[in-house]
Length: 573
Ligand code: ADP
Image 1 (cartoon, rainbow, N blue to C red):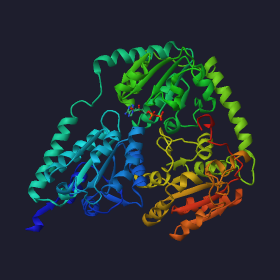
Image 2 (image 1 turned 90 degrees about the vertical axis):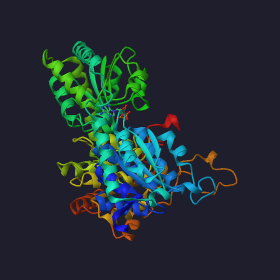
Image 3 (image 1 turned 180 degrees about the vertical axis):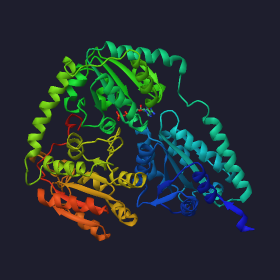
Image 4 (image 1 turned 45 degrees about the vertical axis):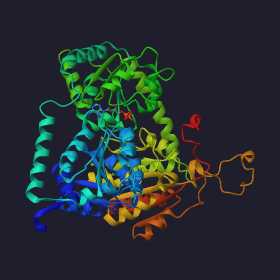
């Protein structure tokens, strides 16, 4: 009897729910439409997007915010290809994600079937694990296996392929329940008793060495990466900073693990801090381009690194003075315990702390003097100051700030304040533009008690602007502020010798329609739109939209000549 059987779509939905999944992002179509509604019926809320790319960025950010894999559902062939953006972005940022795609009928593969693609081959370069269910009975086991792989060791993206014939196969209800129970039991047996990637034998020695190095350092620094935020290491790291008096420097998404307002924050003295520290405890951050590879001239050639990372290969790659493979929260708790027996604390009058504090104060005073001016037409600083103050006035729980763009993100990072962990989402390790609206949707569903405020360059915004319809459809509390300066870096900045040739009358590759009506586009879907050009207009739009907690776009007109080409990365363009 049909009522007593379960098809592949329903089985996948139930297995995801049984594994603890609560949200899934994606675009429906052949052959996964039923999977989305079956999953929702089983308790996994499905957020339907306009494009898989944005849905993938949503799933990636969801993984970072919650520590559970973000789910991305795509159709076969082109849908899977669009989804690669999110899958690769998650892996590049070390965030857990599970992408599930329908694929063509197995019997027709190789014969030019509808949307046919070798999706395992396509996803493999970007995934920790890429597996295919070749029969319905595979589904529960592979769902649990792929979810576990996404969070184990260094988190990242995984892929599960479910061909259309498998989605349509059926099983008796009782057999389906048994398969899910068996997969859950195998999963909990595999994850107990000890978490992966921990080496208790080396650990005691490494913790002792790390504590000793910190104790003997003359100019120590704690560098806090987004891996520490992901690990929820905030309490342990705050305790370490408070008990030792060591200054700290967060990476962009490490901001808020220790509040930006903490007196030992070295953010405004970054060059001094990394240029002169003699021991750097780097927690959950790679010594990649964002940290200048840990090399001179930005770092001192004699600096000794203590690296804490869940990924052993990362430690092997960087060859630090001390490497500790393990979860950031646990390792920092162990270091705190080690220090407790022989406590030390740099006094505020310690020359290193004093140098950092003085530099910070000087730079903050200089920046505040710039910020205090009301510059109209808007530069980047004036609207960012107004946005910063509006966000701070919200108090706790602090809004989640989403940020992308060149100047908008760069200047925003310096001006906007993060006092709570995991409240900043930006272009990340890959410098990915187009992440904004997907991030907003993920943040709003993952943390419903927080307002979400996106500060977007007009170019970054344009990659995913159609998702404002998704915001309106789900009535999410998201306020998007578009820094509209007519294009990439500010529109047409060509010198006269660049404006030659047969296509010289074409618009510049960097320019968009001037003063585009992004707020009107939002209104077309029934959301609230604002056009602002002065401080008073911006303040009033922020106050009204923050209070309303409904989808809004604030089109903020910026002087196209403000800001630099390529933000602060001119040397790479
Ligand atoms: P950032 O961009 O903030 O500099 P990265 O993405 O470069 O950070 O580095 C994050 C690092 O955190 C990765 O090397 C990753 O392996 C590591 N990581 C992820 N989860 C944990 C965890 N639970 N504990 C420690 N390190 C972690």
